[in-house]
Image (tube, rainbow, N blue to C red; front, top):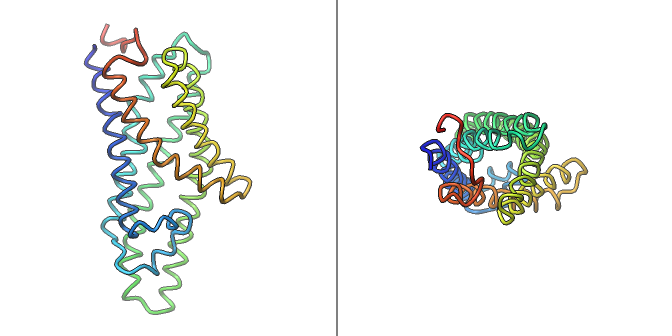
Length: 235
């Protein structure tokens, strides 16, 4: 096994672990009130909501769900060489998902904890402004960047690569397609205004995406998926 393949496998596995940490951090920040994911403003009505956990949930989100997927993005891009003329488009969708999503997490990581800390000492008028600002950021990042643009980009990326991975390993191919479909359904639900569909798909994606990364990283390390391929520099 090449050193590059092994490094990509470990980073992909790490992305999944950190993604799950992010999920539990944000849930813990709001005392596991999962309604927060669809209505973030309710955080102001919760006793003892943690701004520190909220901040670190966004920082770990930036790495777990996004930036640490860059190595596997380009590893699969090389693996797709000769398999499809659309590999550049597919990889571009994955790159768009990663960078837009990471930017959204960085914006919320910098703004949400500050707003939450300022809320307690603010006047009632200022509190309304803080609440509105918090909610508007959630709309811009959550509803706009993450659950419309990113959900579509991730869906295209994972469904496309899953179709080719399926030829190499049926189980991992179908699992990849399934995670991509969940993201695509999140996009569809938000585009059509179906809250039930969007929330259900999102909550499943938030669990299955890091589980995929952990499992796929282990499979890649054991050479059980993307077989008979090594990064060109290792040859």
